[in-house]
Amino acid sequence: MEISRGKVALYFGLIFGAGVGAGVLGSILYTSETVSAKALQVNNNDDWRQRYVESMKTRLNMTDDQLKKLDETLDEVRFEYRLLRTRYKPEMDKIHAVQVEKIKKYLKPEQMAEFDKMEREREEKMRARESGPGV
Image (cartoon, rainbow, N blue to C red; front, side, top):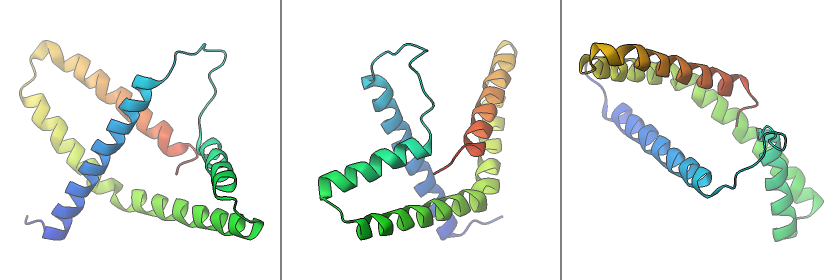
């Protein structure tokens, strides 16, 4: 099966984006302060959105009309992100399955059980993220 240049470029773009996301997340985790479990609150998209809108409002001195347009824009983009994730998820899953099979080829038998456990944990996290508020 031959893959078109466009798909190759898309895959590289997605991998690059994942790397950037991992780097940002790592930086956030590295620089964050330790908090008590009682103080820990779920950081969902609505929290991010409220902080973002408030920041845009105060720092840019946005009018009510501008804020309404910003809200509409954020809704549109959220919908587009969800469509994109839905559209490319099967292809990304195939790529991940190939990765897993390649890794399994060079793991020792005693490493297999832990690797399988790690994969199950990753899948659970992915499902939780997908069922959450999203982008």
